[in-house]
Structures are given as C-alpha cells and as structure tokens.
Length: 503
Ligand code: GLU
Image 1 (cartoon, rainbow, N blue to C red):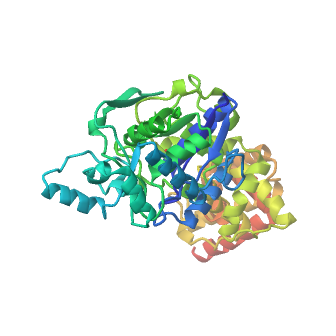
Image 2: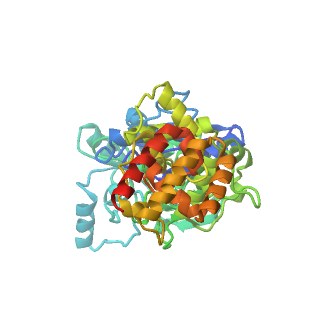
C-alpha cells in the first residue's frame, strides 16, 4: 500500500520551528518511501483560526521549497483539504456513531454545569484532562449524564431542534492502546480516559478529535507523525477507529524540541517563527538541514545534507526518543556553510533584497548595479553569517561614507602628521598599482612600508578607514578593485586633507 502522510496544522499561529520539523519529517518520510505528502488545514477552531496564519503557512513552505502533493491550494483526489469545507462529513460520521450505539446525543447546557449538577448529586469523578480536548471538555470530567438516555427519545429531541452535542462513548472498562513506532506500546485504562468527549459541538462544528480521525481515514493516511503533545489524544482516536471499525494509521510521536534551558522551545529562547529566520537572512537549505537533524540522524560524521539527500536517507528508525535541543549557534554555523556553498551569482541574488531594503541598491537593480553586486559578492562570501549582514559589510561600495573623524584615521601610537604621511604614501602606491592584482599590490605596499620604516598594517589602516569608513572591511585591494581606483583615491584624498588640517 502506498504510504500517505499528512501535515495537519491549525492556522492559529505562525509556522515555527517545531511545526516545520513535523512537516519536514512527514515530507521526508513520504519521499523516502515514494509516498504522498498531504496538507490538511485543521481550521475547526473558528475563534482562533485566522487567514493571516494560512497565508503565513503558504509563504513559509513556498520559501522553504518543500511542498505537499495534495492540499487546499494544489487540490487532489480526496479534497476538500480544509476542514471547514467538510462539515457535512463530520456530522454524518458522528451520527453514524450514534446509530451504531458508540456515541450519544447530549443535551447538557455545558460540561461545567453538568459537572456541577453531578457534584451536587455526589457523582463527581476526577478525570485527567485530555490535551487537545480542553475546548471540548472544558477540562471537566463529564459525568456521562446523557449517556443513559433512551436513544430513540434522544434522537427525537435532537431532530426537534433541541440544542445538543454528540459525545463519544468511552468504554467503561478495559484498556486502549497502540504501538507507537518510536515509543513502543502505550496503553491507558479506559477508566482513565477523559469521559465521553464531545465529537460534534452544539453549533455543528466538529472537535479536533472527530475531524482528525474521520479525515485521516477518508484521506487514506497510513502513518501519522506528529508532536508528542498529541499522545494524550491517541486513546480517544483509537476508540473512535475501533467504533467505526476502521484500521488506524500507524502513529509516531516525535520528540520535543527544547531550548538550551531544557524547556520547550519558545519565543523566549529567540526567534522561533520561520519568517523571522528568513528575514534575518538564513538560507532555507541551512534551516532545512538543521531542522531535519532535530531528533533524527542520517549518516555518521556528516552534517551537510541537501533536501534530496535527506529524502533519500530518512528513516523512522533513526528518530531519537530523547528530546532535541535547538542550538542557535549550530544553526548559525550551518548558515555560514550554506552561504559559502553559493556561487557568486546566487549569493548576489540572495543579498540583493537585503541591499535594496537597506536602500543601497534599487529594488530592480540596473545592469551596472547588478554587475557591482556580483563583483562584491565574493568579497563577503567567506565572512557572512547571515545574508542580512551584507548591507553593513558592503555599504561602502554603494554609498560614500562620511569623511572619518581624524582620530579614526590614526594607527596606534601615531599622530595626525604620521597618519598623513602613511596615507599619502598609500595613495601614491595605489596610484601606481592595479588593485585587481592583489598579490602585486600587497608586495608593493609591503616594500613601500619597509622603505618608509612603517608597519604594513599602519600603512594600510588609514587607507582602509578612508575608503570603507570602517576598520574592519572585506579584503582591501579587492574592495578597491570593485569600487574603482579613482573613487578610492578621491576618498583617501579627502581624509588626507582632514588629517593635514589637524596637524
Ligand atoms: N491540528 C493539529 C495541530 O495543530 C494536528 C495534530 C495531528 O497531527 O493530529 O497540530
């Protein structure tokens, strides 16, 4: 049977590292076995679902570049893929369970009052709250008030329009469990399972549990890989599969992603929304590579994998049980590696939007600007941690820096007269040499420095500051070659005048 997996986000927040990890593992698994990867939008929580989050979802995955085979935007054979467009199916299935005696109509106004009524009657039960079910259960153990109603009578009341929900009958005894691919057997006593969760709400909306199970079945999902926080929902789902007489998909609950303090990764650890990483100048290939390694291993002693490599090598057998720790420093390292792997053309194209945003080039650069950016790209390829560092590093090539204050132009232990002498010599040497010939230039400056009794560094320093506006710049002669020798000399002359005026 062809494997079919899905990523089933609820559009109630921005796509973050954890959600992308879930999507990526599903994608890699599908690719590794020649299966299908499906996107299903679980937008049944109408108060929290928002269009901006749907847009963020599409934007994020378009940027990351691994995409679903079937989904709301690309269609497919078992759509619609948006749960709010499937409501009739959920009602139909909930009613089917009622008809089979596996679920029942409940007319209690809400769980809270039902629980209070039951408490008064001495019926209160302590039940663990089910994760993902808080909205359905209100966190209260529902005292099963309506479970004993006569089914025919209940059906008549529901048909007559009396407000109701449909609840799943959790078996009163016995055990429910499943074999998690990663974690092994997990079992619950049915007596410990949240009693009789709501499947269909009074407004006709399905709960997560009903929609999730019905859709996984109708969409032919064979494997479910999702975060471990969904484990508490699993017994309800298993009971539903059993009630419908359906075979459940195989479940694999993924290890948590933690921050460096051992707590679940969240905003307080730094950026977690994928969009922030994009804006910060991470390459999607670096992010994908790093996220793929959060809780999964591939080949020994190897760190760098393309998406194709990952898809070929991924195996659920290599997922770790232990939580993964998200390490921003490691990710930064990956990003640097991927920046170095870009061709000059690619790097120029990648930094162009950042340069444009900084106002250094036009959003649609002309031929001259594009050529300059292409020439500038190799100057920073070895140094950038993020694409967003490019504007600061390359600013001097696209905008003339202000004439530096005199004290910035002074090498250590040198006064204005000494610096003026050094800069004057540097200008002379530059005029006589070709900056594109880096080695030749360096040899000439070295010889010139020796002759003048200067350290090479002291000869270069005022020139560097005059031309680039900073003490730390990309390699100087290459930079001057991109800027143009005349422009560099003109900047140096201005600085020289400032130095002379300060003598
Ligand atoms: N809609 C759920 C979520 O937001 C899906 C959980 C699951 O994969 O079953 O994560």
